Image (cartoon, helix red, strand yellow):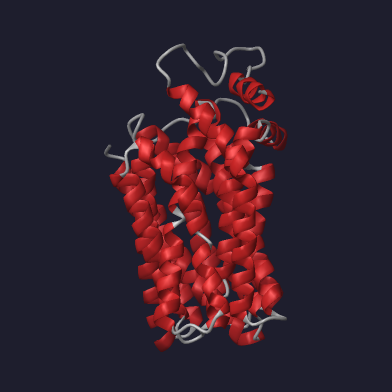
Length: 415
């Protein structure tokens, strides 16, 4: 897998860049406005624009050359960081740049993870994705640690410039390290195609349950994390590092050490673990205890990795890039929603109480989505049975494709 190394290194640089940029922006905006809501929006606001991109541009993910698209997205991140570092930029202009960056970034996840599915062996996606997730966690730890150190000695705008340099480095690595692969699907991308495929992906209860289970509980818990700065201004960096360590540990265990059958069994416990420890934040916690609770909770993010494996089994190869892009973009959008809700709540309640309320909402969403996930799990077990030839789509051709799995889900719900 010679292309995995440059993709891995570039992804590390990209995550470090976005972590530095997000932390610097949140610090800069909070210092200027003293508003938890605006600080949360500065860090997670681009995800709202990514949601717009997911509903209009996501068909591009399967219809462009991956190397070119990924390099251009990285260049856009570097340029946005330089623009945000401009002294005296009005707050409205800063959020306009943040939104434009989110719109461009909406293409990156679909292209990146669709390419990953091509360059790893057929059964190696979970391991490959877990390696990328682990690198994401490690780079978040390094990014928050480095960001905390930098912000202690240099202005936030200097930190933004360093983040831009990392983004430009990622673009160079992608351009030189990846081969010039053709698009996965022929034809021109369009808003109509994006809408059609998105509707298809969300057309069956099984796939909807998988998507919503990756989006809603996750986003509400990220709302808890968005309040780390107002909850513990002097220890926020330590809380972010602890959360990243927990996520890294969970992804390592799920991707490297758990066999497929065990991965299916632990999905539900991990989904509930994601929110439970944040209930403790309603109590006064010392920084070490708060960091421990955040680390334990973040182990639950491994459920998202395991649900991605289930999603891949429920969609056809010709839309896999868009399917994974929709997952990533929807998750980021829900994280932005969760962060905004948490910020609004913290305007009127103590930050710890707001975090506990967000955790309760996440637990309620997890419980409500569990029946649909059982349907999805039954369908994936059916796919893996040796008898019969179960296919997601009819063979490619000029006529309409038949979603056999959708019919299977409908039959199962009627039983």
